[in-house]
Length: 142
Ligand SMILES: [Zn+2]
Image 1 (cartoon, helix red, strand yellow):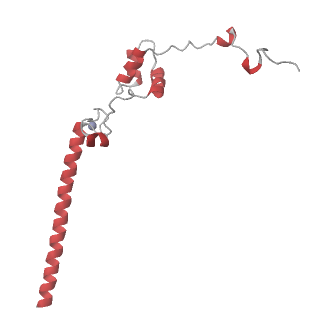
Image 2 (image 1 turned 30 degrees about the vertical axis):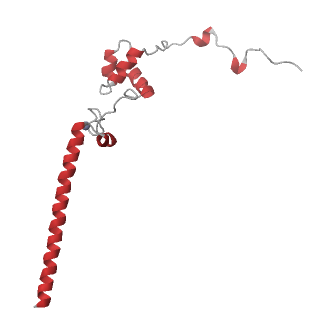
Image 3 (image 1 turned 90 degrees about the horizontal axis):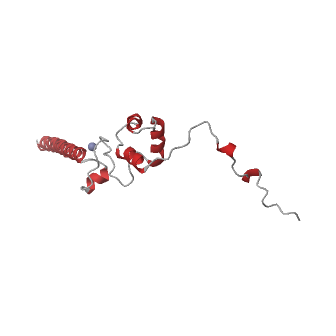
């Protein structure tokens, strides 16, 4: 039986000089410093970051963001309401809601004002029903 080893062709052909040649410039690896700058500025556009990073295009910044995310992993996420300030990590409730301190306090003030309005409405409706019942009873007795 003929052995078929070491022929070096087909799908396993080794890459040659010609397969390495490409009209596009070679991919330049991102340095930790470059990547750090992109991750440190989630609020900046790709074009703004490209202007800060010599030799990088906005397209390259967008591509690296697709791969690594817009902000560093494990960093404090941005508020889901204003998307500008970090989530208030010290407050478990604010953290659960994903809000910064300002947005959380605004939200809580709005909620308590709404609760007060709902309570006042409930009381008005209850009083109106009580008056109606009294009036009905008064008629029945008369
Ligand atoms: Zn906010």
